[in-house]
Image 1 (tube, rainbow, N blue to C red):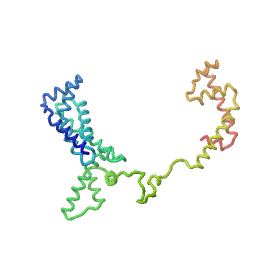
Image 2 (cartoon, rainbow, N blue to C red):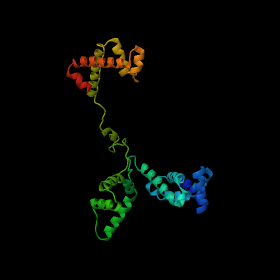
Image 3 (cartoon, rainbow, N blue to C red):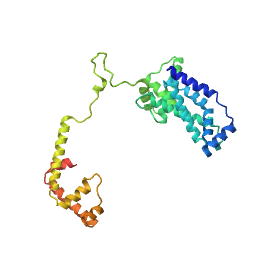
Image 4 (tube, helix red, strand yellow):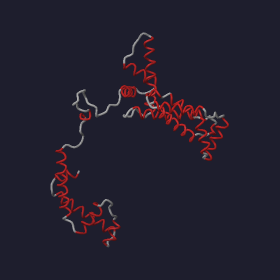
Length: 292
């Protein structure tokens, strides 16, 4: 952790020593990058506003992410802003870059807050970064008036304040209140305690289901083989080439091989399938139950 602090302080010191750009110089650099892809101009623009990125990154330290990672994400947002910035609009680059930097850092914080995705919609993102602040203010106001809010009332007021559905507030409250646990952790303090992963339901097929599936597959293969035996050698060849290959052959290629027209190959294929169907139907309804 001390290394992270040292590195972030070094970056901050370097950023503070960077030049301050006036509006004219800033525009010149932006035009040079946009019109000529001048990497030196881009580097100068990014370096000059890295202090802004670091300042915004520092506001998200309370979410527990390493400062170096926050600065890196802020830098990525700054580079995206530089790449998309249009100096013709007459807006200062710093004003434009603020949104990109904040969005990049917020996305990083939300991705790393929990192994379970915390949220991705605009309302969920607004809740994540404002819920605790709004909740604390509402609780202070209630106490100042000599009252107290229960959980449901508080969530209703948060939903109204932030402008999101109540269900989103309830979902986010549950996620922010919990934490990630290892499935390999024991359920009790005992040395021989069962791990939580052992309590998960096994959704794989049961042994009897596997045996039944193997039996059905063997029976179906036998019936299909017997049905294929009712076909002529030429019909068997057409069925294998058209339906049993990983890359089925075309009617035209089979026609060239067998010296037949494409339409004649199609007719033989249809006739072969009709013979196989009659052979399978003669086995009774159990064949139909396996084929559907």
